[in-house]
Image 1 (cartoon, rainbow, N blue to C red):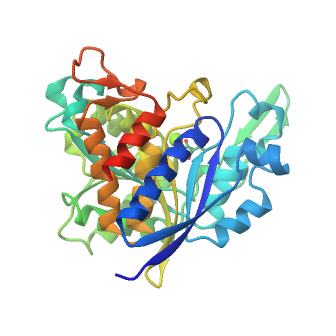
Image 2: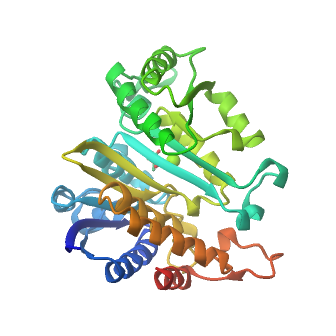
Length: 369
Ligand code: IPM
Ligand code: MG
């Protein structure tokens, strides 16, 4: 097998970002040794780290590095204590993360949620609601809807202010994310639940019509529509009914956190943000769905699994290395099966579980690769 070098921009960011990124890079180095590939990894500051280093949440040099790379491995950005000290347009969430998503047209966000049987205790639901373990995929539209729609502003009015966000979707935007959803369902249990609020929102009506029309091209996939409020409830009552959950941007943001909680911890949820595929190559940004968790940052307490599984998604979707992606996922599975637990997934009642820190979890996963 010929050796390929993949260029990775590693943007660790703030809070627990650097320590979980270190863990993921350690695992990637183990993958390099085992498989015939090599990674040219360049680290660059983003978020508050970017502001401190270069005065911008997304420094020009960091953006240039991303452009020159095959994929972005992203940590997390934003520090609630510091964020209010600068104008909102300059804050890390908007100026770095949302900007990168838009800059690279990363419209498709995949968030696979899995609850392995051995972590059943971490799930807040009663065991009978968990079935044989949970396994669903949230496909979230990532560059449209209320996060980006214009006008978006706060203006003064007599007696206070008026804040305006605009929810806007076009047919092509819905079509392309619908295709991603149906194609993902085809590779899974062939069921797609499309989420909307068609009983109230114009956007919901267009979403439902468009997804229904695209669905005709995927006769092998069962399509079902659900209002977002009902979906939030159904996730709690009967999560095993879901396979692929297709959402617009904000609904996907909310439901993916809810789904992650079902899987035990936000610290277990990876994500892939993908653009269009050109010439068989898909540029993507890979990041844990959780945040910077400043309360536990720098204490070797953070769960690195979401970041490590995000690296696996990078191997799968951007580098087309299913073998290496699976090796990482299997290594994570082994560490968990061996009883290793960071604090967020630790259950003192489980006699076989051993509470470990970020570095010990990373060592075990890297060794298992
Ligand atoms: C996520 C996060 C981001 C989002 C924030 C940090 C802007 O919550 O990736 O889910 O809302 O998209
Ligand atoms: Mg979120």
